[in-house]
Image 1 (cartoon, rainbow, N blue to C red):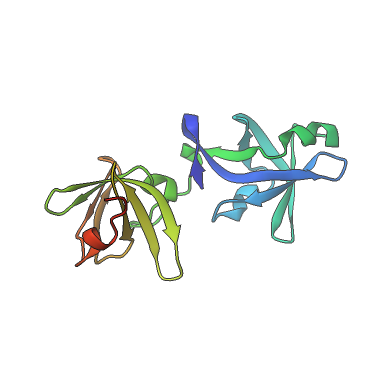
Image 2: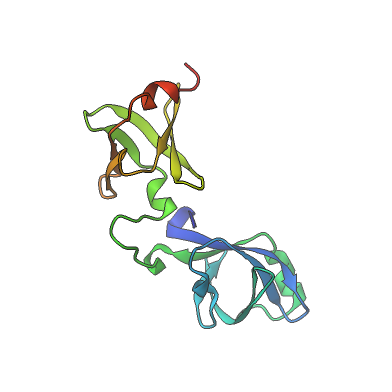
Length: 174
């Protein structure tokens, strides 16, 4: 899920019309595919819409929105984001966070050194890695318990304990 302005989070993207009755083929961008179940409230161009029907075809959702009844009405929506409001986000267990909550956090070491802001998350087989950007450097922080000591969303801050070599080997642009 990716945040957008005005408190919306992208959960999918409309790929193309599907048939002549206004159905839409959607690339799902959420870990909660039940968001595309019938009767679900979603937003397109920040306008509320209800999913009337949905089915899955080759890993994509095919949905029918209550306000779209023809291929002519569906065509202009191609490429548009399907969003939810922040207050529609499912709660996660303690210690788990959505990507949109992590991106933008300021990163500090346990001794108080400010390292920059998380600008991106790279996923690998073993763990996620946070890209922390500062004016003249980029640091790759592994999202592992040995390094990430705390996350405080209210303060907008992540506290890390750098492992040997982390702050010297990952610098770019010095």
